[in-house]
Image (cartoon, rainbow, N blue to C red; front, side, top):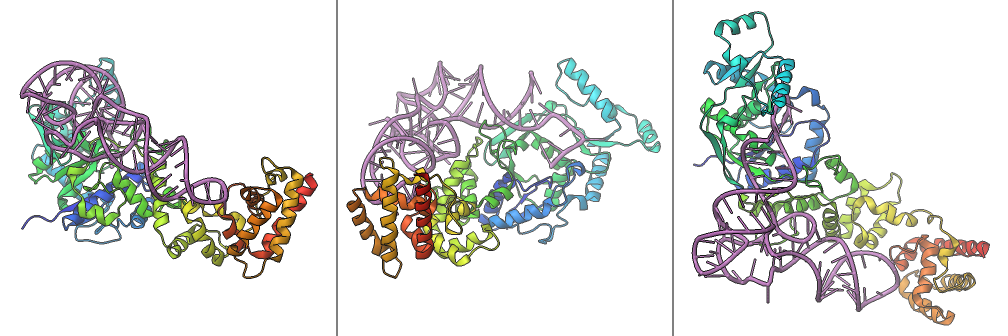
Amino acid sequence: MTQEVRTRIAPSPTGDPHVGTAYMSLFDKAYAHHRGGKFILRIEDTDQERYNPTSVGEIIKALDWLGLTPDEGPGIGGDYGPYVQSERLHLYQEHAQRLIEIGAAYRCFCTRERLDRMRAEQAARKEPPHYDRTCLRLSPDEVEGNLAEGMPFTVRLQTPDEGTTGFNDMVRGEITFENRVLDDPILLKSDGFPVYHLAVVVDDHYMKISHVVRGEEWISSTPIHVLLYKAFGWETPAFAHMPLMRNQDRSKISKRKNNTSMKWYREQGFLPEAMINFLALMGWSMPDGEEIFGYEAVEREFSFNRVTTSGPVFDLVKLTSINGKYIRMLSDDELYNRLLPYLPENIDQERVRQVAPVIKDRLTRLGEFMELTAYLFGPPPPYEASLLVPRKGTPAAALAALARLHTLLEELPQPWTHEQWEAAMRALAADLGMKAGDLFMVLRVAVTGSTVSPPLFESLEILGKEETLRRVAEAEARLGEAG
RNA sequence: GGCGCAUUCGUCUAGAGGCCUAGGACACCUCCCUCUCAAGGAGGAGAUCAGGGGUUCGAAUCCCCUAUGCGCUACCA
């Protein structure tokens, strides 16, 4: 029997849930599940200085929202916990100790100050920065002495001086590094916390991670990880380095140049399924070229062979376009339900139900609903009387048109539905010597306060006869004052 | 600076030696539909496949060099 496929996402809880975390999770989960395996969440909170306690919950919430809920993780359960690194400290310490014992790692008593000075000198000499191995040359007695004095120390991996270390990347093929360019990395910090390199290898091993799927930024440190697996005598997992999402200037996506918080996308009213579709299109494509597809399709079709190697620019315009498509695919009832979290507390929900189908084609984000339809829930925004006057018309003519419109609307029979009045209004326009479109525009401005609006007739129906007439009367007054 | 990864329309991509006078999507333009705006439909413009050398009967696809971009180069991840 082959080994179970297990992938993981390992975010550090340092702030808002990052869109890059969602991006990686999508492929992690899709691949694992495609192979009948498991997707694991592990929290990498070994950097105490950047730790943010609310972040873990936010990350889980964001993944849930997208439908990327992990199979194992903190608060979720699983047989390989704990899934938070700060609860596994003893493990890293034991393993660092083991590396020292077998001669693969050594204690380093150098202070930050000395290291800073050393690097400054190297830079001055135009040498690449690297640890000078002062502490590797310490005699056993010196080490014992330092320990006895209680000097703080870090643990460094001793990297080989010769040969190469490589690995086969599932998206990029063979990648090899000269061992001599490898610096002796710190594995355990002086506060007893591990550095990423140690923690990730120990955890991935004990959590039985079979495929390490992560960002391209990790390629350079993979040889260290490979060396660690070797030192421990463990089997190395498969690696897949995904392309990095980019800002418009092609630098690694950042919150200065993009909205990187998943919370933001949710608040704006991007649909999770649109988000998934968009993310899946970055660096991956469906075999049949389909561009609108859901998570199930990604899971069914996913393969690292179809992952692109160059970093895609994150394009909010395209996301918005996809989001609009998904909104239009919603039934009226679904749209109504999805809209609810984006509405003010005391809104008239029945009216929302009426408005939803009318606005559907015009919505690009759920959060846009109120700004597009405010005039249907309250008075129209203030507008200049001149807006009521058609381009080639006069204020007097507009006023006359409004008066006729007023009477017409008043006299129209119930039920108050537009099929009845459209013909009558067109006739009125002809009678007034106006283009129907111009007459409709006068009414539109009177009712919506704008020359750009959702459909006029449906708007009148929703507002009802009384409110419509009120607005027409007000427009007449406004024009009267102005003229 | 060193090392690594990358390079097809503005952007996301298709493309695994002949099907490519390079296809699709977003954005853009035109037209149709139309009460405005959208949505929808039909068209259009847009890439000498980074550049240069090879290999081959034939290269966007394979190899080499150069350029450019990005990443790493922390007791961050």
